[in-house]
Image (cartoon, rainbow, N blue to C red; front, side, top):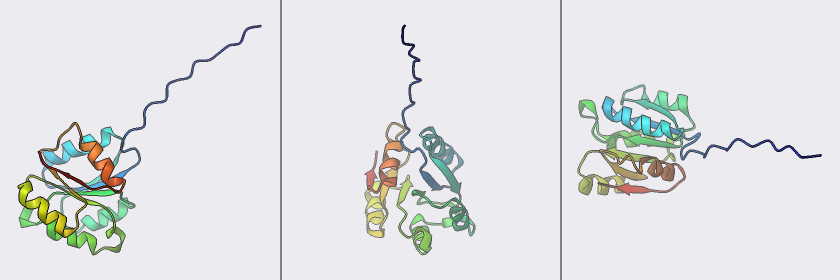
Length: 148
């Protein structure tokens, strides 16, 4: 009597950001679409907002958050450095890694971001080939400082 072997379906590889909760503060629709797409391709759960009085509330609804991506140059003269302080003032987000994702001159902005306490800096335009890996590293407690 022979043995019948049923072939197993291959297990799909686990994505880099599977189940990670990433919140993006970005005012440019194109940049937001690119960043969201790259994160979602790696199975991240993505929340986003332009900076406003409701942003912390939106973040609270998404909590717990694994990482926050913050543009440094937002509409209406809002500075990501000031927004960093507002996010950190909220006890729920005082330890969540915050990464500056910015088109500002990295030679200047990176230094200021380090002094402020950011967990990293990624220059725009983001590098599609390594962006998800960079965010996965930050969500896992590492720092990432990257300029093209």
